[in-house]
Image (cartoon, rainbow, N blue to C red; front, side, top):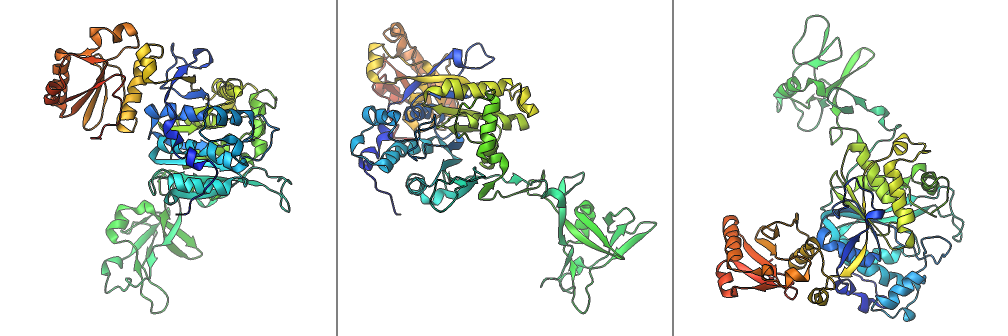
Length: 564
């Protein structure tokens, strides 16, 4: 497969692996929740470098995110808007100087952009579920480069589509010879042919052909008469029989008193035809046949039902063209939320994000991530979807700029509580919901644990251990009295730990004989092995091995388990 080479690639190639895993620090004052204590299990808005924030999410969310949408800087060179679009911006310069293994001074504009995107895309892929989908908005400045590194990181076979999103209906006259009206959205899945994309509802003018009955929606389908090669009556005599149309337009296989029209599968000339359905099928499904009268004759048709059996739908087109998707609608929405103040340039329309998330197949309960959150449109769209169908989809936003609280989170607060002067009643009443606001804490590291200067919470360390050991986030992790915090099909994980030096230096933090026997009993009942993480032990590993237990001393022995 062709690959894209760029300056700095050899240095940035595995950089995502070296980024330390940090904890997430809750800022209760900036959070919005009905609970007394904000939780990391809630919707999240994270303020900080999105590379480090993505790495911080891995222990809890690796392989769990159903839909990712990102709108990264387009690298146009523009400095005029609040989300600085220059790779040469002070933010990017600081990243190259402090956190990047690449010499930023030797890179050109496109090289810097690719060095910035490469490790982030790797982490995004790791967070995506096996049936997940990622949408990346981009314009012509980097679209060709993005497509190539997406092919390399996600795999060319996982490419789904390149969408044309017409967001500027009037057009921009910036480009030579053409008025630019669209951007692109690259769509990839985590595993080829695994994403179950949803269809979209029909527009008002498209639904005119559909009718709703007591079963659901339908429209006129195939003629019930069949004249294919299997139609000769001597081959299929069971398909040659009369069907009766009654006075009320319904059909059946038996005549009724009063007026009923008898219809046979007969064609003009010598052509033989049959019914598509046998007599028993028609008798069992009379409501699935549509009788249509034209002058003095009747024709019978199958009722064509939508695949879902709920509402008519269609495959979405690769071109997104509608006033509701436009930059004008997006800007008007943000100004409406912020009392006519132009607080953010070039936002995306919540209708656009609403439809992308719907198409991704993100059902109630799924997680949607945006690591270039900007004005918070993704959260707005997720909350609107939840309001529509009563779902509990979860959003995670990451924003590195200083307006993460005053714009990103503030927009989410307002749409949750209600926007007084909004034209849309649902938005006036409020979309409901909550979120926890976080910043990035210190890395989880051995030295900090040894000195006691940086002791992560129990849950943060448990998430970190599970992810490091298995390469995935466990389905459920909780702090229990027996110190078992989670399990897989083959293993149970125990963490004897409290985030205080007093506990860690005491005998209470040790794996002793009594605890080992309790753990061995639980493992025997479940048929699983145990990994026990603790600062010390008072029993030999030989005895523990006979009990089906592997001891891992904190903080040194946190590593990948070879058996997984």
